[in-house]
Image (cartoon, rainbow, N blue to C red):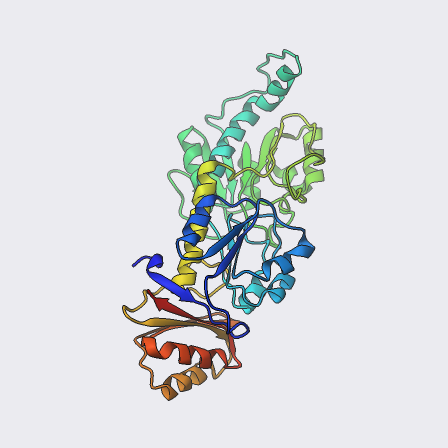
Length: 421
């Protein structure tokens, strides 16, 4: 059965009287495909092209059960505190560092993202920019636009036979490696996790080894304390003279002023940067960077995944995850939550309970079930260090009373009843 075979009824410890259609707020111009999927589940969808100012977000979100964002919206502790009815957050992008994940977890709110849908778009952009840097195409194009004819071959090279070093060999890095190899590049990669090499791609044992061996270095890592400023002056000095650096990961990974200095000195021969430590809230004038005006530097406005194909795929991927959570209680793919995926028993109702992971919780829930003389047809429990997530399928005539009693337990964070249509 698909998710649309079930209709959710929302029961929450703090909002137990709320019933009827759930409401979703989608910010930052999320693809209409997401609206279609959520609306098909009976969810009322409100869409906005931009993210509101940070101070207005808590009051805006307070009237909704589902929040969808992209990379600009910061979902902080204050947002969760102002929105006790919030069931789930969808990040319609790869990264989730814009959400305070630990507090979302403690608030009983799973956070979903799209780790796969824009990988091809980013990988293709990297291939295009590698060629542009090798041929200094950005400079030649600007010169001709300004009326200057500068036909030259000095410093312009083919990429065939050169070495590409990929830092972060996940979904994007591995796909880039396949594309690069097909174009004649030798591919090496470094990752803190053990990864299966694609094709003839080869792993190296350290970041230093990769930097010293590569003609082009691309970065595909998340924003973490470990990756903050991981490429600074000392790392740039390790790179081959004339090598190029490409960053399509997060703006905090590279120390921008030190990259600018390495470009001015000529040690770094080129750079392509798509992400920045500070980025504008929306389109318009006024963006500045120390990298502006430097030779053989390609600057793009965080468009790695900005293709029509990728945005539609992201919209549908994340919306489908949200729909499965709302209708079935499925948390597979959530980045901050215990993972459960179990089909709903035919003819039964499901209780989904998120509770504090403390001793005695299951005993209290079992007592409620026993007192109600309810028969459990299916039960799945998963936990992490903060919360436990329990789903149970019961007889239809008993689920409302049992759900209310479980909601009233002091250890419960959120409790819902999912009813079969």
